[in-house]
Length: 214
Image (tube, rainbow, N blue to C red; front, top):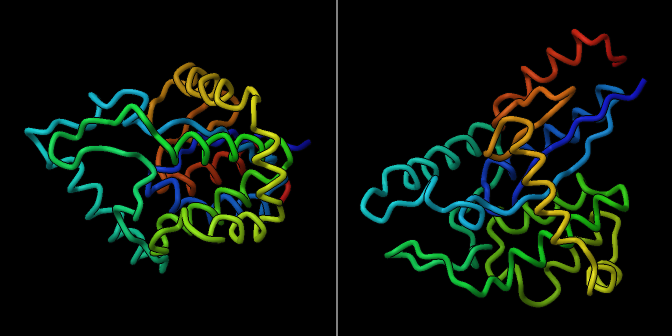
């Protein structure tokens, strides 16, 4: 029987980007349905958990560590992306009220997941954002990335216009909290959370314990 793996994932997390090849391999190696559950970055959900203008050690470590992890995995990585999916003042770390990027990317991700292309969408779009494409929001960069995921950007934009996609993002955040975590990426199977890009191997071990077919 197919096992469902819920993946809580955001477009501002470099570790979410780094987990995407593993999610594809997970589907190839096991009888699993990987469901992408898009959530807002922690800067939107609760910036107090991460950002303290008087202490830059945590964000600086994340930048250093994610670049190192990308090098280890052989994946391109530019942090922060240009433009950053979250509009935020560099000095104060204050999050702007207007967020032209993250709401659209998240809503499109929800629609892609509804069409059974969630993994493909986040793989291509996060590679665009974190892979070093300057001005990824300009021209046909996003359109081409969505096409590589097997989707049409114009169709997705039409689908999210006036839809409940951002409400689903909030529901995903509630589900992540109910699963016992707050960070991304978090993979959940049978109500058991596995937090972090480096926990895929542990998740695979658990799936083997369940006797899932390879």
